[in-house]
Amino acid sequence: MSTLAGRTILMSGGSRGIGLAIALRAARDGANVVLLAKTDQPHPRLPGTVHTAVDEIEEAGGKARAVVGDVRDDADVARAVATAVEAFGGIDVVVNNASAIDLSTTRELDMKKYDLMQDINARGSLLLAKAAIDQLERSDRAHILTLSPPLNLDPAWAGKHLAYTMAKYGMSLVTLGLAEELRGAGIAANSLWPRTTIATAAVANLLGGAEMVARSRTPEIMADAAHAILVRDPAECTGNFFIDDEVLADAGVTDLEQYRADPDGGQLEEDIFLGPAH
Image 1 (cartoon, rainbow, N blue to C red):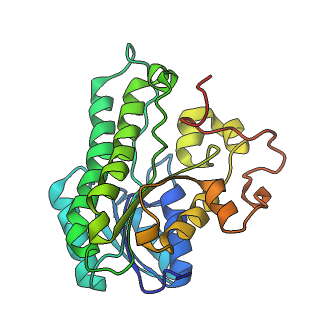
Image 2: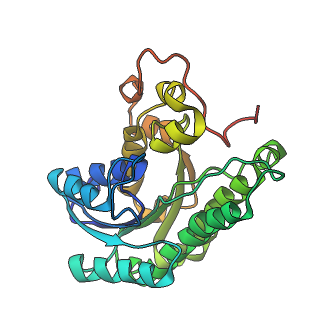
Image 3: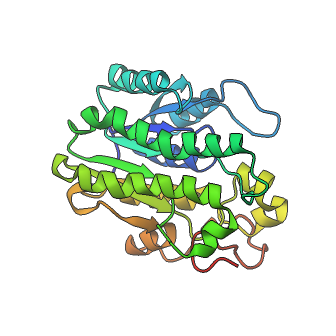
């Protein structure tokens, strides 16, 4: 396969940023997308809602449904699965996109932020995948794709921001475990992580403002890499911790200048969890 036409994707988040870019890339194939997100109303610092995302997906050529809810809530997740089944007849792909970030050191960490990250990142990823297993098992091209890093056990990462590292590695453990557990069911589980920072609201608002955005790549690099993974045969593509530029290189895409947020932004900023922590 080289297309997601007619496939149904269930995604956490997706109102903006990387998740929306992945959804739009799938929509251009003619995919169906169900977004489970909290953004029912506009946020003063964040563009877009789950409803505007649905409009964009349909304008791009796909079909979409918005489920206003929280990936931390079991009932909301069950409702999102039911919506996908009712609207589109099943689920072929789960994308664990929703994630919370706080890079505080342990001394400075508010434990409410720890709970938030664990509940959205680790628990939410496990819950969304778990709730969709019965439907995924009916698909002949079933994928679970989680936006989380390779399990780099260099202690510098945990030492730099322990709580966030625990939460993101929790997502990666979902990939590691489900790839093995669901291998016999024909369901692939993989992770995808960017080589560089990505020009999103989180980078702009939390990690370094306009300067960091200028040194980032656009969400479209993650969208194209995700697409390249999701059209692969799940029997031959599971248990991987992919990096976006490596996926694209395998697909024959070597000119990455098209993905620069600012062609004059200077040296690109390597994302965290890759290489040694500085």
